[in-house]
Length: 125
Image (cartoon, rainbow, N blue to C red; front, side, top):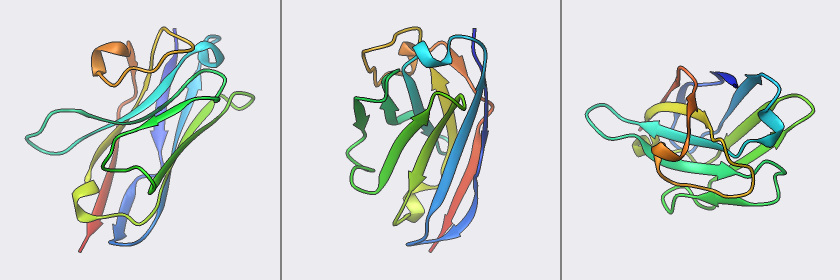
């Protein structure tokens, strides 16, 4: 089982950047496809990005493509989300998630079985 702790959220002006980190503990991190999701108040939890266990394949939501980049460092048990050109509509709690699969990417929250506690990202206009 993997335990996840996100960090790096905060308040930023529109057009700015933030880098989220998700530190994982547990022996199976390097075997897990990892994902980032976000949830705004009153809305469902939405897929943002995901990366396979080896880091060779990534997927992004259309709304963040070309602005956000997901990456991972298996030696440090950490997955990152670099967020550039942030917009007010990116404001949400961002969650890191681990799946029980290695080489496939799912966009549904049900594909993932372990979640972090979330980190708040607020983008002011």
